[in-house]
Image (cartoon, rainbow, N blue to C red; front, side, top):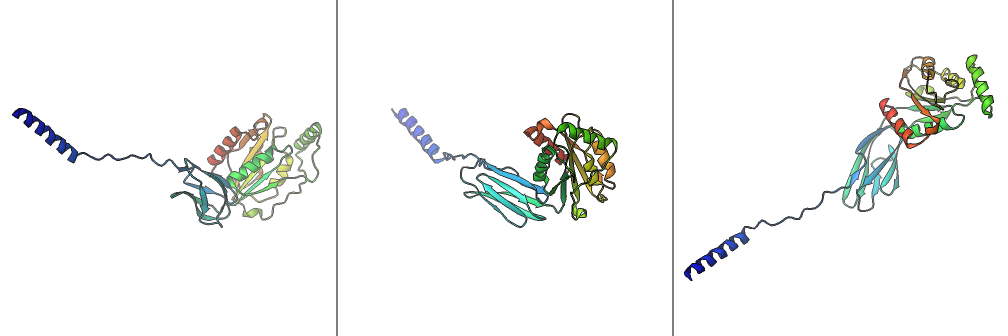
Length: 267
């Protein structure tokens, strides 16, 4: 009986000690999964980027630290950012008490995008490029329009190429000297750029500029067209040419191809 009392007393002592030294449990919360698509990027004036917030459990309130540097168009958990002029700005996405930020640097680089387009394919590519890198855009137009009939247009283009004719154009770019980079876009006609494109590039001083070329074609690719344009733009620094096919304009595959190309040439 005495032994039993001793054992019961010992167990009671152990339980008391355990109660005193029990480590309190801590409730573990999941990490905040709210994220902004990128924390920094650089743009040229006129370029457009889209920012988005993922994992947000509430509404997103967007703001910019400097409306003179970038403008912001809000659309729920997304915001369209347009670069306006050289400088720095911070984009803030606020969800409740959470603040997510993205630093934006706008360069002072001036870009011109000049394109020749008969079917509209080169124009579509030019418009997409402008959204990605910004800049001014101009269409190269001839004084006398090319025939709407395909066979007649092909025949005229062939003769112009054989005779190395320079068709008269109506396109004039004021203050061409202000541009640091010039994008030239054109379709492939008989393996080369339309002669109207040659007329355009020969009308300006290219010293110190960066020449960026792209072309569209049914299947032939750029061929020697970019090399010819490069020779005509004396004094310009040339970059890698983008070649796009008519049947891929402007699908997601081509957009990715353009994005990769622009990144590779640091446009």
